[in-house]
Image (cartoon, rainbow, N blue to C red; front, top):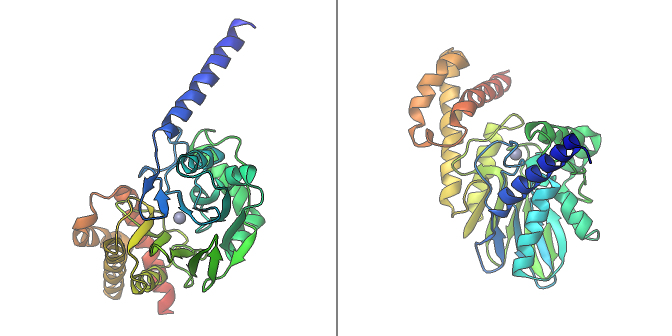
Length: 313
Ligand SMILES: [Zn+2]
């Protein structure tokens, strides 16, 4: 082997071990009698975090393991399988993908390779959007944001469509599926694990991080969280940020409704979204330290403005 090839090989090996080391640093936390969550970092996808930023979770049922949102890449999915193996030797029998955003479902690939018979559930619209090219777009976006760290990941779509309102029994455990139209996206499902009364909200709820809301309805998000509150869950697992109780529902709903109500009022007063920003910033003091706040606030105001403008005609 010549010197250049050797240097190249060493660089590749050190990159791979650096990536492996990063994902090695995460462990699943037990959040109820049967459920576990790996809490991802409150960051955007980058080369170091390998796109990992969500909350992959799993529930151990009588007959096998049910996964929720296996993460951003085949590597994140493998990390999840490693954490599952520390808890149980039961197979993965089902996966829920909460919505179309690839940081939540690209890890399907790892689960499917290890357990090809596992049923992968997602909203009907998630499945059709992945088939229509969104799957490849998310794969490409993750690859470029992480400078190739997600390489090796393939698009594996869900194979069982949901529309919301379903009551499923998986591995002897009842699960309730909730979808109330456009909220964080048009594709969201929330999953209630009834035995432990744990609600997996997907990105309909976020904790200490402001997330992208480019596909969202502000009004729909506020209403969907109202539905979540009526379920009175004991434990709430958000799409991003630490697990908690119903205070997470109140907190994120307060952010969305404060923003939406103020944009509505200032819209009536004929202010532009740009003029609104400092006024609304002053009403959101409890959220100033949230990750992503500086990047997202202006975009959220613009999004709410467009929604209110469309509703006004
Ligand atoms: Zn999302």
